[in-house]
Image (cartoon, rainbow, N blue to C red; front, side, top):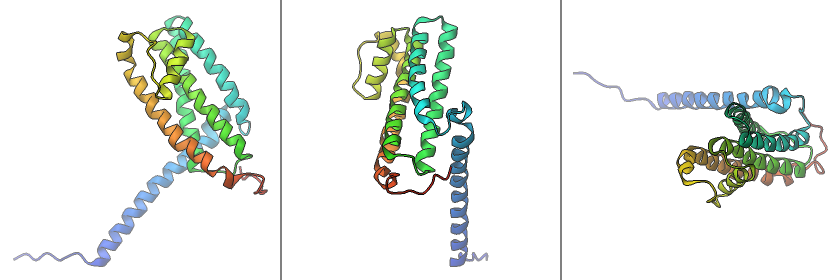
Length: 207
């Protein structure tokens, strides 16, 4: 007869502790990757505008508007290049802003942080406008309008019906991205703004 030894409480506690350590190590590594990306590999750092995020975000608005124009008016190859640049900006913006809320630092100014975050949110609409212009070939204003109407869940009826089916993956991606950015990123930065205002905390920045 084979007897099975029931697990001892100490065994269960040890396995649970090991499991917790593995999960913590995974998320610590992910957090470290976000921190490293924001510190060394994000676009503002690569182009020499670290700590000058205002210039970067404002310049990105102008550049993305120009990319919408290029995607709507130029031949396919330059238009596709414009879409690739816009997609890279979207990915970088998501990673960089996720790093800000989950690996926080004390901002220079709470009001500045909120304004930069809202500007980044607007830039996401412009970046998706580039993608819509490439996929549909519509005019610049129509692509931007459709992007912001989608991002704000208003909806738009300006694009032709045949194009609507091919746009569904892009529309779904924009809705999910915008929801994450608005509900998580903007809400988190806005909620913690009063508590981290530089007027009340005079300690120097650590980065």
